Image (cartoon, rainbow, N blue to C red; front, side, top):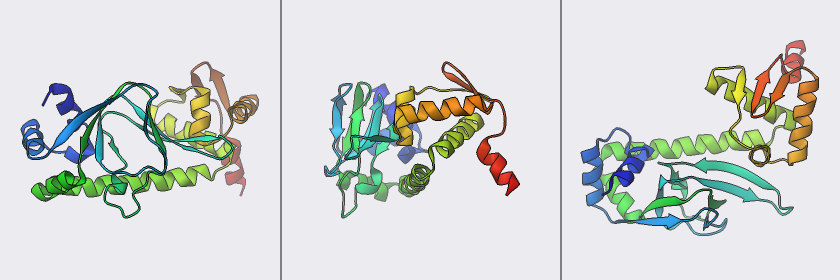
Length: 227
């Protein structure tokens, strides 16, 4: 096993708590292969069967839902260590609900479901990690569905609040483009731009290139205080 593959597996929640030798020993007991995808290449279309356990070893992939009106909702970004669609691996209905695309050149480690099952039996820790991985995925999707139902203003405010907490600053750096933000929120780019401009005019935020600075309490927060 090469060092890049080992590092990718160490970043995977499935192997949390295992040392290098433990991971190497465990992987020697199962069959796996490495697959490579070029930037822009589709890994899976929505409706394809989830037939394998796939872990991102290098690169980044994105999962999206495409509506009938060509509206794209960006569901998740899969970085190094991400296990793709673990909840569908042993499901009766194992069809991908999203389209997954390589946003950079990507290397994937692929295993058969039977080999994953063998690992779960071999290591209680891996078994517990898999249960925790599924639980975290369900929690994330639940929050994502709740987020999608919010108004445009509420989505932006929640995003800013979350990023301010992560970055521990009222001046937050936005790593996504405006189009990527709109796709993440499931809205049109012009709607996002218009709402951001309104919030700036109200003195709630200040836009500065790739930065958003929180200037005052949001309208939503003020309304909640009055109520």
